[in-house]
Amino acid sequence: MADTKSELSEIRKMGGKPQKNSGRGWQKGDATLGPFVVDVKEYKKTFGLSRDMWGKISTDASKHRKEPALMVCLGDGTAMRLWVIGDEMFHLMLDAYQEKYGDDNG
Image 1 (cartoon, rainbow, N blue to C red):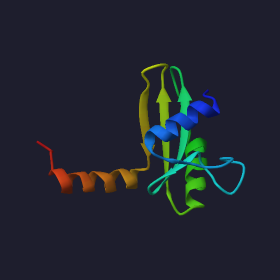
Image 2: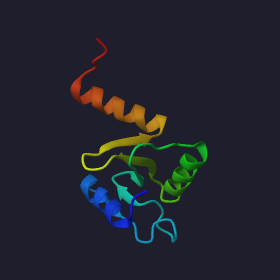
Image 3: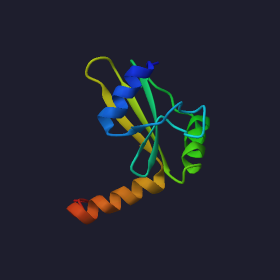
Image 4: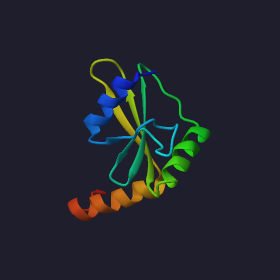
């Protein structure tokens, strides 16, 4: 698991706003970015996602009337960064992409 400095570095790279005392006070999640409350998870090789974990991230986001997002950073050095968002938000983003760039269904 990552330390706070490393997590803060990831938040800055994504352009997010860090939350003070994330998870302990009123501000939930590790950062906010646009319509999202973001939870950052860093691991060297593997990461497991559970319904309970996503439920907590979703609950924290709903307290701020924002969308939940999970940013997973895997690896040392050159990291692989992945995002987990809900199905409804994915389809909103897909619609926006297709509107801007056209429908690419072959």
